[in-house]
Length: 209
Ligand code: PRP
Ligand code: URA
Image (cartoon, rainbow, N blue to C red; front, side, top):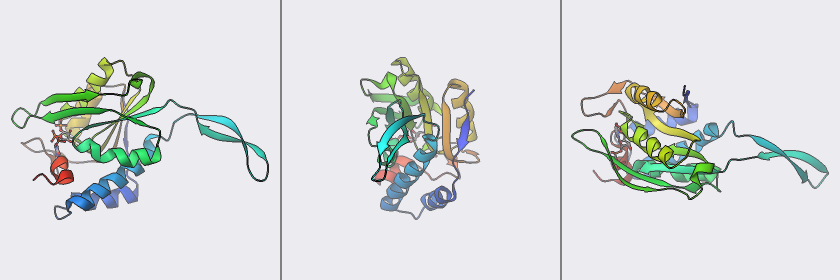
């Protein structure tokens, strides 16, 4: 069964509250999402296995620790997921990036796929699928299904805000995928938007509305 980890560090809560404010503009919204993604990556990578390595400091030789692997892949769900890539990549500079293009049909709320390009060795990597919003869960469920069809197994989902409905649907569809969120909100409204949420993440990130 998947675990749901709420990464509610005070710095994350503070930055998220500014993002939620409807008066926060595109530049600040983009920078805050980037910063929160980096802070969340700290928690998402917490249990990566370490290996002993010999290091010579200016004083003496020692046995030190380094991350053993596996290598990391970051898979943003377009568009809004792109806003989380740089922050995570700052913490994991060697990560390769894949892209999955999905949008939610405004009438049916069903995800529609339009692009998928993963690193050639994606199946051997630890993958972080990123998207700020987990609303009905449809987009994240389809993205992970697509990645699994390409042979990938080690997958974690990283979101900013989740609705309880999305968490339930996602963990039911992918019980082997652990979920990291900064906040769990109250509910979905009739249009499938998270309440209180932050509105349309893609539009706020790119200034398209
Ligand atoms: C948003 C968001 C998620 C999806 C969440 O993307 O970034 O991908 O909706 O909703 P769901 O959990 O109900 O599927 P959107 O479809 O608006 O596309 P965009 O990022 O291109 O704006
Ligand atoms: N997509 C968003 O960008 N925001 C929501 O609240 C729900 C789906």
